[in-house]
Image 1 (cartoon, rainbow, N blue to C red):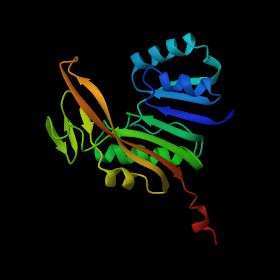
Image 2: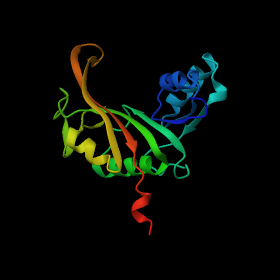
Image 3: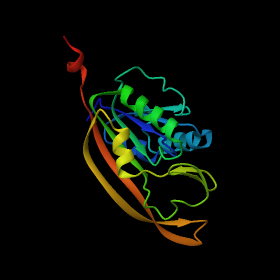
Length: 190
């Protein structure tokens, strides 16, 4: 996979970015948190993959500073479920813009079947604030955000999670999705 370019959108501490780099990918690791970016830098140095990863401190709610069709893959693991519908739509539009035709999008987001769904202050449909904003995705909502993509894989998953400093153990529920960006350019050709 040498030469394939991945955007790790909301990279956090860089664990996934390091794994991609070790497997021959060129990685751009982006996060809004300076603390996460610093931890990511340490992780990259510790794993000796500095040459394969470019780190960017940037808020994904702002336009992404990449040219159209820059990336072969966008990977968004638990980073897209913190925004209202309007912002979520903007982010998905930016992902669509920066992905190459036939590029892959890997998404993992909270499901409306999650035990925390409906907890806290309701801000809008499926968006609640309980310590921080959390947007829960229904299957239909997630698929709707992927207009212009072929859905290759979609599955609801469950994993044990300790909430509130390990005082309550529950099962978190997520949607995992892989989509391939379609080429609609032929529609506009005369």
